[in-house]
Length: 298
Image (cartoon, rainbow, N blue to C red; front, side, top):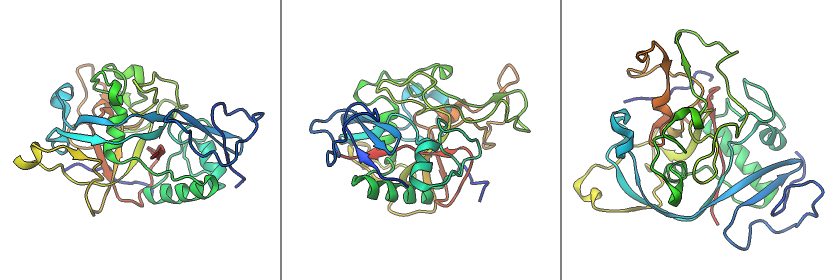
């Protein structure tokens, strides 16, 4: 069993649709589009975009393109249906977090960097405050929603990583000949949206920071009966000790056999950045590789 353990133990907001220019006339009370389409939120001077993801049925878990990299907790691959939802085009930034919370817990500082050093519990506090300010009902994605979006939804091309089979196209991840120490001049979080997006136009679903999901971690049901069924909007285990993290990060997390270098003597964490990879941590765990993105249900 693999785990990612934690190592480190406002102003007014209005909603507008379309452009997030500060010069736009606020459309107070228009919280979501009348049609299911991308829309933007203006929180004081901070704009963030929500992408409309049409629901559908997909194969979740260790699908064929994951090959031998898949861990046991990604098996068996199984059919899942998710309903329509919105998801953040980018990971939540330090600028947005600071606007809502009034402080910035991140180890690496920068307004366009993803917020990190936030626990699952911290995310719930942030979301509660954001919801009160906006009158909306943001939340963390379910693990199924996250993987469906990472795979490209109903536009999926079946990539191993989110948006490509070439990790360098889409992800900030760890690679170095030295795995015993971290050079923060080389290894750190990066500005959101600087790699290629996936099929839905989502950035950094692979790499940069791990992203918290709403679910308790649990192993997939491998019973013969379950293999013939399609799960509809699953929400994970009913209880547990660990919450789910997805997407991999900039950081090499020592576990399993991943400390072994590749043929060129390079250590890397590509395996953690795959669309089906699952990690878990206690809800109170904070780490400088943990962040999140928002979801909203129509």
